[in-house]
Image 1 (cartoon, rainbow, N blue to C red):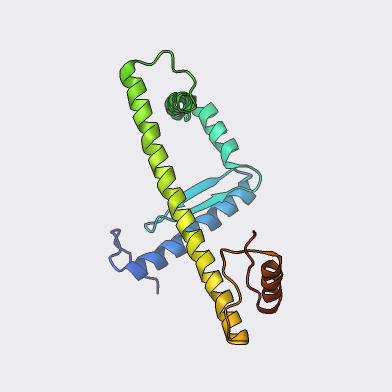
Image 2 (cartoon, rainbow, N blue to C red):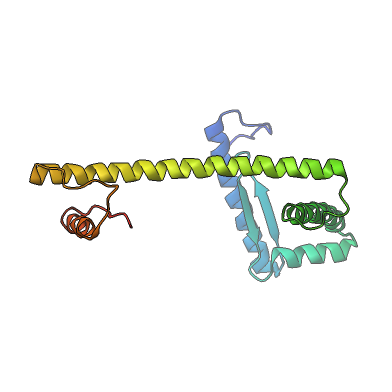
Length: 197
């Protein structure tokens, strides 16, 4: 006894819908393979599921580009002209932005300033001063981090000496050969990075 006729409407249950999609997709691809083998046809199928996944079948003897070219030639249509024109527009816009950015870089390097008005020169000067301020703040932060790291390492060295010799043998501000030799000895023993003097 065969199955009853299925009503053609959207399957509401997501799991059932996905199972049905997978089965019917596989059936469609099987028919496409049979058509390719039995009839020497060139077949291409592209399916996008409701989960936004793409599934494709293409005859082994061809490529998608070859089939699209054949389609264009047969129907005398150009699938790519509007896309190509849009790409040319985008390319023109990107090249324009690129030219402007190159000009701005040259101006910040002190070149191509002759055709600027006083207002534009004042704006450029302010931009450079603002950039310089940001760079100095960043530099100060880096220096502060390096100083803190150096202080921590210095404290480690003092702690090691105090622990092993019960005395603080040196001050960091007075480097000399013996001090440097002692530091390198500590570095060998305790793997503490030695600052360069």
